[in-house]
Image 1 (cartoon, rainbow, N blue to C red):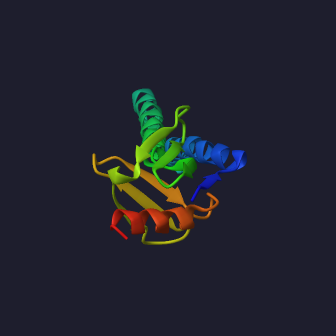
Image 2 (image 1 turned 45 degrees about the vertical axis):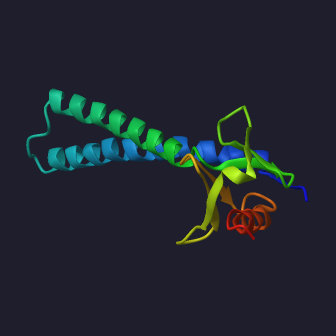
Length: 156
């Protein structure tokens, strides 16, 4: 049995775009909120924040934006963008990686079905602790391979 699937280029691009957007939204949101409060204080003749405070908040906004981007990128690091399984090995490539990994089916410890809101995700956990995430809405045949790997990891 050979099963394979690949994400569309647009979907791969949109994952990276959302990481950037998350960083800009969080960092820019903090700076924007500060500027709004500063403007309201000035409008009602209260003392606006001094120059050092403005610099600190803008620097903080940059730090928050970079941290949000890094967190988003870290959360997406295990998402599989293409895979192939030939019955002996599971070959897959994750987001942002050029090289594909090949794992023997005996290395699979378990396959857990994601909980929560859609899209459905399956997490393939290997014996060494690493994992790969199959997004069923974005990756053709992900549901099929997840069920097959799960039955194989249980000895069925």
